[in-house]
Amino acid sequence: MILHHIQTSASTDNALSTCLRYLHPNDSILLAGDAVNCLLQPRWQQRLASVNLFVLQDDIHARGLQQRIDVIAKPMSAELFHIIDYSNFVEQSLKHSKVITW
Image (cartoon, rainbow, N blue to C red; front, side):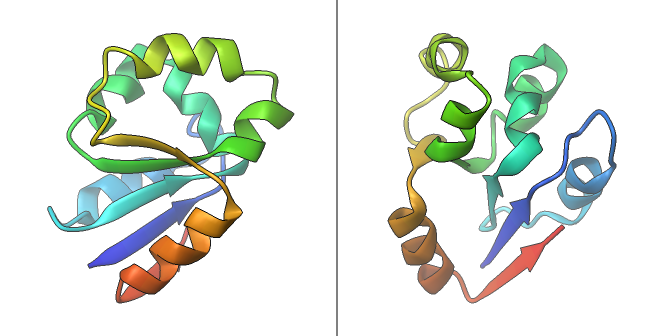
């Protein structure tokens, strides 16, 4: 069980798309930094809909995306889309056997 930590924008880097190619069904993805912007694009919303997904709350707020993310998060399953803080990030890092930063 791996936690894939994606930090770069999906529009300027291929980290997220590459990660999805190697993702195991028990793995999770954590979006941080500019990677949170991908949630605004329907293409990425569809590709991430079946992934156990975590998003850092501070990075959503830093980019002024809170209201837009709230609208997006409602139709997604609460079990697949978790907005977390840094304490939860540490907790997830310990729950997963490995963390890979892309």
